[in-house]
Image (tube, rainbow over all chains, first blue to last red; front, top):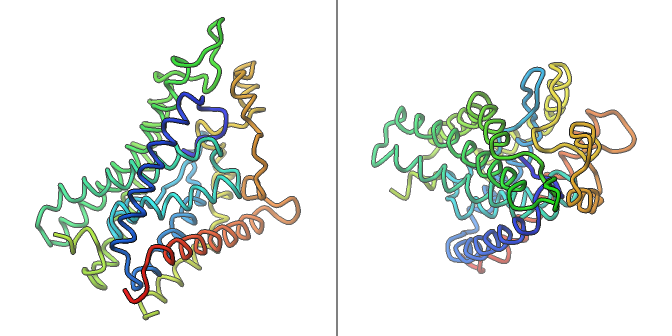
Length: 226
Length: 106
């Protein structure tokens, strides 16, 4: 899901970068207001967790690979705004140091995985949980939160890639950037996430939420806020 | 750091040691790279041409440790080392950001 350099034209990566930068500014402002010293170890570990989790490439036998992101659980644990910072740091290190995701695509990749994903995951969780504190309800909500969060992120990526042939083609009609239209990018990204990767993200989100909940429910932002 | 946080740290350390699974399993099951992340060479052979704009951007950035792989040493070891370096950098960056964000005495 890490878009490399050259797949998005400037008509796409520049506006998305601006949107992402606006979220970064707002997230830093929130962090300044709310972050306490006690939370710093959790924030650091959350980022490291996401970085390591993305190294576990999950094979689709005979096909491609993908991975979970961890942004859903981070959003539930620390809140979606803190997750924006935690996951963006990971994606920037991946792009700059490891060439995973393009440098021009940092704005887009952060938008997909560090903004769309944590906010969708968080909203879905809150919608399902309501005011319930039952572990079964929390578990189901956490699974669906991870599942839909990663799926939304994958679809955002597919949209950005798939509009390239429409908005940027040479005079003779050959695409300048990502050559595949929406009719290819959306099904390709949707299928692998619907049937495998989002399930993994959902499981990871649920298991970690249960583990933290058992230890101390007050640690979990999405629960204590209610 | 309390007992719970220590347990989480141990969990992360175990993850860091297991990362080679993320390259060994795909190889065993014949799975290629991620969809939509093909290199310029791979794309060229898939399409028969390289989109003009794409060719201008591709390779513009020389990542220090491209694809989590060092030029020497075994692949799994290289992957573990990349994981440790990445984890350290990510941890350090988050720590520095937190220092800016948290005012003293809060």
